[in-house]
Image (cartoon, rainbow, N blue to C red):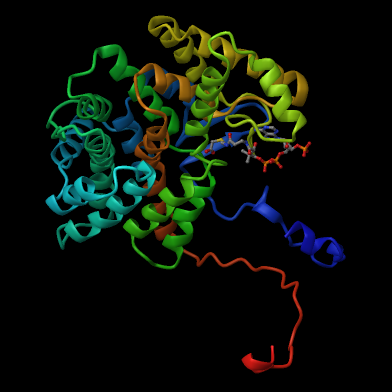
Length: 384
Ligand code: CMC
């Protein structure tokens, strides 16, 4: 598109905005980002307050209802999520039989799409949102077990989403510290304004399509390395550095050489934040303490060296994906599941935006500037 526009006088088209940067297309009560101050609010609550106090389930309720639950409401939501964790047999069979080399995000996308067929006829959007939030961790853990030749671990009807996910993934109950770390990651990834996947979700909703299609499309959008796929890419970069150069690798020289080649370093930069992403601050702390505990100090040290180099060379800060990669790695989770964990949390934000869009809908239908020839003569196939 950049090439197409080179010879066009763009002053004639003041409404063209590649990437819709800075365009406000909706109003929302779900989140606020101040990119200059590095501030993030979910429905009235600062992310630091939530990181310190909230569970993922409380954040789900908050995003869906614009207020925190009381004790009874939280109990009820927890019970409903616990009751909804099991997968329909057809979906489990798909997971058992699909190619073991499939991308986990592709399996998640297909399995979530399948869930629509198994919802009760009288279920409404909030029931669907609860069902998807409850079942996504089961899908991810089941596929990881199956592809490793292990038995699927059935979900338990107790504990938090974080507890159950780690239990189903590893086949043993997680310790309190691991559960809290996973829970905090889910809190930090739940909602983030009009990012690409949330926009996708709202665009699908705006056609009056239904919530499973909107979430399936959002998963596809999150999968890309410029969005949620960046956390997997960060870990793959660090692991490649280790494979190529061992624990004595030089992350500064590596970063400089990538910059020289005009390559992007995954986990850095943001369309909205011009200062440090507040979520990265929490993840950085977790990454430090977990790396110390698990003997991955070198990964944390490399990360900090890359952060320093990126700041000095480009004045670019890490985003949410950078330190989350080493946090998940220290929890023993393999890199290609990281984007699925992002999705497992962001389902709360996507569905909250779906409700909001549906309540006050207007079809999302921007335009594109046509830059090719018009009214060419028709030439029969044999004469072309
Ligand atoms: N590494 C090196 N240079 C970068 C990076 C990076 N990660 N990010 C931005 N830049 C440079 C870019 O090369 C350009 O430089 P110049 O003006 O000299 O050509 C300048 O910064 C502006 O970059 P841009 O790509 O036009 O900015 P954008 O607003 O379109 O980019 C971004 C936002 C997230 C796509 C980009 O920063 C990026 O590609 N980052 C790497 C992928 C990544 O970590 N994505 C996760 C985003 S946060 C979580 C989420 O939303 O999922």
